[in-house]
Image 1: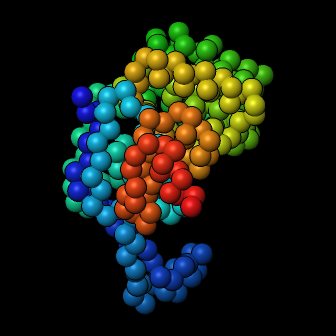
Image 2: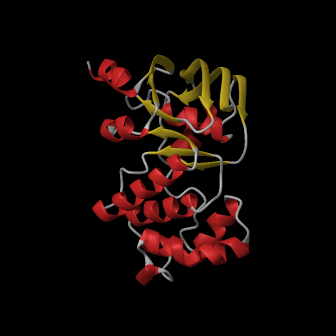
Length: 239
């Protein structure tokens, strides 16, 4: 059974050629026509992810990895092609997405949980597990803007992992966090594999990609350069 299918997906961005850092610069340049250059982020991507498969996505910065995940999540619309996702999907893509920095960590747990599809009753039931996993109990009533980036990442991951879904999109989730948190995250990964969850896992950490993924694709300048067994694709990528 196919969990995620991409048919001939392409995505291009229009980037301004002249950077304007201030409102004054923007006002002065109103009378001048802004020029744009096209950046092809993805080109004719065809991809199937089987139910229960862990797909690793590797590639250099700017190769299209995050754009691919955002198109699967529905954050970006492709310029052409079709995306089909079967079942419930939870994206954990960027630090702080769905968070309000002026609210407390407690309030953000409820806010982000609702965004991810949990009911208030479910969040109440899982609240302690979320807090304990993130390790933020002493700071639960502090505003999120006072949290370090690592604390915010741990909290976001903790909420996402409490959400019942069929497919998870994970972008560098093990890049932030101390040893204890990473060990807890790995225990969650083992549980997800045993329960047959589908995961698309983007990471620069090739050791974890090799360890957790059943198959790997190598993105290079918006195209799939190679697809296959983790050891083989990683060897090609690092050659």
